[in-house]
Length: 113
Image 1 (tube, rainbow, N blue to C red):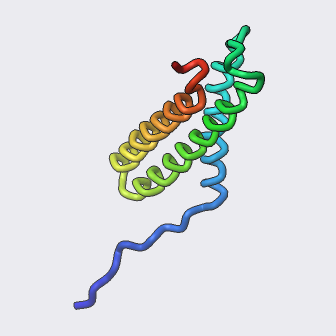
Image 2 (image 1 turned 180 degrees about the vertical axis):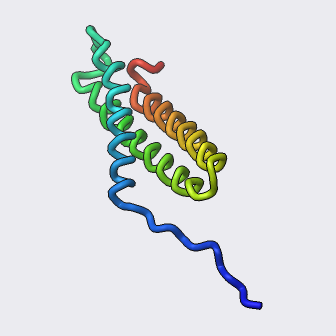
């Protein structure tokens, strides 16, 4: 009797990963842009360039969330419809948490007291 190894690693597509990073970052930039552009009269204690921090940190967190979604989905994609749905749900939950943390870290000290 010979032992077969069915646990072969699936190759990760670099282009698909970059696409996930860009989609996550772009979505985060749109979300934080809505918050930043809604401020008509910023407080003087925030400084002149107060909007640079949220516009940098939140898309970085969105890119990390997009990478998390990609890897979770890639891990669960090969195993049937239920595993695929579980991968989508876990990936979206992780992305939303990463986006929320990015918004909080970006707006800390300005709009988020």
